[in-house]
Structure formats: structure tokens, C-alpha cells
Length: 512
Ligand code: GLA
Image (tube, rainbow, N blue to C red):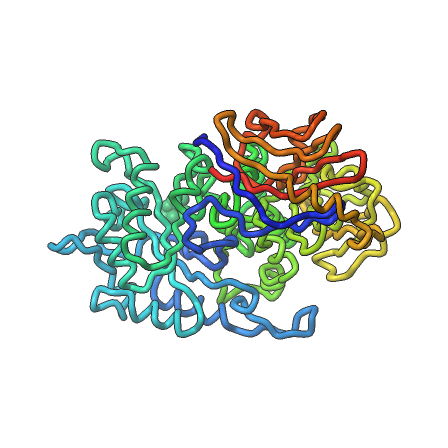
């Protein structure tokens, strides 16, 4: 890891009042994909042979089509709930470049591209309020070998895409071993990143490298999202497999605004997935702050599938501006998984918001009680307002320490927990404690990262953005204390200090 530096957060926190900061980023810093991109990609359903201009237009119409009134009594469209990117995958081009090295569009599939541009199509999408995505590979050919890859043509391809009004590039890695004597994928992706930057057009860069060279370790400086695994298929084993891979590699540590783990396009509405499995698939993707690229035929989707894909309350979990990826905090035997995602809360440290998904891994339905204590990150003694994001109601559990849940086979329950704040008024915070909080600072010196603890005889606890305590130590006198050995990853940290006269807290942003 590159040497870390601490940026100071200027907000002063009182004895119990802590404002959480959002939008932290160490990614490309280009303002693109600050929340996981939402849209559609042609591959999962239309694959190579079926993708045509008509399919893209039909899909775009489906994006803006209003559906019958939902639970809020509103007629909404896919666009209304945030889906924007309409992305063509492999097989849009001809087999060769022009004499001048330009990619060529297959005009049998895309008849309005007779001028060898996608401008007619991208204008049509843009006029509907949508965005246009395209596909290439960093190797000598795309995966289906129907068109050349961008190897050694990064600048001219990126320029061509920018002229075509492209907003999203999926960059695969097929046949990269044949590119310039086997240039490593990471370097090829850097070339495309630089080429895109040169165009000056904001475009989402989606790295499709299947997790082969751990893109989560470097992807945030090269793209906005990176595939974590090989291709998904439309069956439960494949869906759950992608989630389990994410869990076992602890990939939640690498996601943040502008940089997302991508377990692949959604299969909701495809293949052999049952209704419960479709809902669970969607819940788990949202829990993981995954890009939400639908992969079904939107023009023939059932209303049940639309209801899943358009659930605003669940989408809000995915799109939460804090940008923290949820993670599995507990397994009850081998039957129930509990996932928790910390959400942005406009209020205080003590009024935190969490999304929780309970997943039934078995084929039979299950019901029972789950205690807050089982949720790992939640305070077992605190009271929470609990909202069921599929029933769209608040459960009457604020007075208890648990929730009762019933899940179909392979089904989920998705809850939003908002802590009921204790009756502490900001006015009760002693002025002297406020002044001390202001002095709680961090810096990078020859000794690495240091934190200034302003009070005597203090107990210091440092939490990461997931709410895990990652360091705890005592100090005897006000001084700078080195913490580099304790903070191994960049991210948001919350430093809490207990003194004889009260409690200080401050959020610190640790950047690379
Ligand atoms: C790879 C990718 C898929 C799709 C195909 C197209 O397999 O992982 O998502 O883009 O290529 O050929």
C-alpha cells in the first residue's frame, strides 16, 4: 500500500454528536459512478446473435414505460427509479477495422449506423433521458471473436466512442495474452483509462477481468467497477456462488464511491430463478452495493419481475451515498445468513442506520426470531425502528431486541433499522468537551499516521466505516500517538475518546 496521509475533517463533534461524512473517494475522482451504475446490458438475455438496434430501442422504450400504480399508488418507470445506462455487449461490430484503423459497426444489426457511427442510436437514447453503453475487449479480439479488440488502438477507440456519445465502456479482457507480447491486464486497462481521460468525455469504465488478478486491489484507480468473478448464469447456485465469493474474499473492504465490486449483471427475470430467488438475488446485489445492470428482456418482463427491479426502498440501499458495501456478519448454522450494510444517516453516531438482509439458504421455508445481538454491528441494547422493505411497513418492534422473520426457500427478508436516539440534547454537551474535540486531529509524520489525543487518562477506540472496532488503547497525557500499525486500510475512521469528563468523537478520512 502506498504511504497513507490523513486528511483532517473540519467538523467539530460534541460529546455524543457525530456527523457522518459522505462521498469519500480515492478513486478516479472524475465524478462518475459515485453510486453504483444502474441500467441494462444485452449479454445475459440476448447474447451474441440476438442483439440488434431494434432490441436496444425496444429496451429503451421499456425503460420509460410507466407501469400500473405501485405500493405508493404511483405509476413509475425504470427511469424513474434510477436505471439509466442502456449497454450493448459483444457482437455489435464487423470482423475487421477500416484501412484507417477505425472499428466498424455491423450495419445489418444496426441499420441507422450506415455512417459508421452510433450517433443516431445514442441521440435517440439521450433524447429519452437515457445513457448509452458499449463493449470492447483490451485484447486482440472480443470474447466472441466477431470483432477486433482495442489492443494497441486504445486512443482511437476511446475517441471513436466519445464521438459516438458513449457514456459507459465495458472493457473485457479476452485475448489480452496476444496483446503486445502479453502485456498484463492491469497495464492494458490503464491505457484505456488514459485514452478515455484524453477524450474529456465522462464515461463509466467497467473492467471485466473476472477477478483473475485481484482487480479489487487496483481497480479503483483504473476504472469505476471491476468484475469479481467469471460469468453469472441464471440459476440459484450461480447467484449464491457470486455472493459467497464476495464474502470469502472480504471484498466489502474495497468498495467506495466511484469504485465498486461487480459480481456481474443481474439475472433477475431470467432462466430457472423462482420469484423468491429473484428477490433474494436483487436484495443481495443491493446489499453488496453492486452495479445494477439488468440482464433480462425488459419488453417481455412480468409485473412481478418489474416489482422486484423497481423497489425504490431496496434500490436506496444499493445507492446509499455513504458507499459502504454490506457484508455477511453471521451465519446461523448453514441455514441463515445475516448481511448488514451501514447506511448514511444525517444524524448522529448514536442514530445509525443499517440495512439488514436475512437469507434462507435452504429450499424449505423458515421462520423464527433473530436478535439484534446476532446482527454483529448493532447495539444489542439499543432500540431501532424496523422497516420491512418488501412489505413497505414499519414493524412494531422498537421496544424489543429482536425481529420475527419468515422466509421462503432461498428467500430473504430485507429490513432497514434506524436507531431510536436516546434523549440527549446537543445543548447538554459541555463547552470544554467541544473544545477538546476540536483538537482531536491527525497528521502524517516520519512516524507514520499519528492522532492527537487532547485529554489525560483517556481510553481511545477507533472504528472503521463498517462500525468494527479496529483499535483500542489507553493514553496517559495529551500527545500525538502513532496508529499506522492499527489502520491498515484507507477509508473512513471514527475515533472515540473517553475522558474523565466526557466523550469526544471525530471522523477522520484516511487517504492514500
Ligand atoms: C465475457 C464477459 C461477459 C460477456 C461476454 C461477451 O464472457 O464476461 O459478460 O461480455 O464476454 O462475449
